[in-house]
Image 1: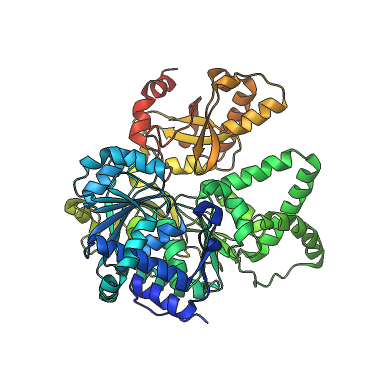
Image 2: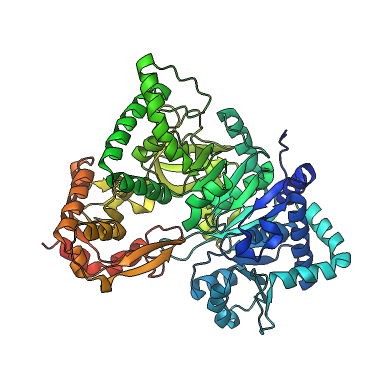
Length: 637
């Protein structure tokens, strides 16, 4: 039985779990991706052995307390081993998104003065190695591929690092234990760089106290909300561990609670991995929930009979869902909630739920709930998942708050809201509507940026999130938009782009939206169609287009169509469907918010083109500059 202990450092939390659950499974993964390593799983004791080998290896290289080690790699069990080992040495982990360019990665390595860099694969190594001379503090690169061989003396693989640790264990183990046991809650644990939608990212300093206070708050909040976590749970990790979301809400939460961590092969295999590992929870971003929903809708389109049956079932399910709702519009999604239904509705729901079970099967056999954060999720989308019995729970947090400071309890989920203050945090609304946070998880400051650090806090020490919110009468918060993102029309009206962009989240026809209007008389937009959807529609209807112009890309492990020809976006059927989608969205907007003109683009916004951050947020300045002529033409027609 799990019993929580407060105020543990990260090495203490790991050691406690090993002592409690040493023979239980700590990690599960596809062994084929790791040369058959340990049959695809590690117990907590086996994981501890790996962690100690890596730690002793780093100490043999001369790693000092508080020195920085950067990790630039896709998520993997080795990422976690390295994270725990480095932090256990009293050093600081610096995270770098594996998709960043040499210039972006060099900035982080240099700004953090990282001495070592762990890279995930040959592609990343070949991207970084040519610029190593421009990173004067960087002494060694460690390849997480355990069999990679390099002729460059500056590069070793993880096996070589662990072997170095094993050979020097007698000299380094006591030092590792001493370092690990003498870490204080005030010591730095990690530095994570913000995405930087308007400029260079800032290094956010997270201490051991940040993690400890956040996990302590999560434990009690979840316990009181009716969905506690313990060693019987399994989390599926597939988002980048370089981001605070999965690292805190999946990896370290699992380590603290003694839960098993299962690693997806890639984001593209997430649905197959859900069935393979049967997790009880996972962290996800709205875009992936939207893709699941759209894929389901497209599947129904192929069978009119199935579509009619499921729409009937949804009607029944929505009526049943209303019995879970309280006077504030909050739904109790706990499985033990006593549904008291009229006899007729109960019989209809019994039939409808057999159809819903097919949707729930997509998430495995044990899924209890999933987190949604990083961006807002459509209330209609949440209601869809609630109707079919999948508790997707929205929260809100940032790197600076060490993940979620607001969270919808499972006992009272409110679509359209990020929930009340939660997980040990305190929240308030400033006079201008900005959300301010104190309490658990608040970061120690921005690395090498004292002025920015001062500007990020109020005089009485509350963190200024930069997000505008509205607080409902029940204490729940709703995001309006980023403070800097608000569009100021020439008419004096203010428009929140998030409100408009989120309206498209459940439309199959539109994939990406960028809203314009600063100092203009009305709102316009750049729209990127869902190219894969229209390719399927065109092919099914015999519509001819230039297939040689199609360009594909890998994004998050999924294959997407990144670009089409001009003839593609000029197809009347595409124009008609896009126009219908815009009209539908406009019907939910105030007159001054309505999208009056738009341009359909033949290519996606991408991270590679500098238009998106690693967390897929649009870079406003870049897009405004790149599409200046297109945007101006929308206001000259």
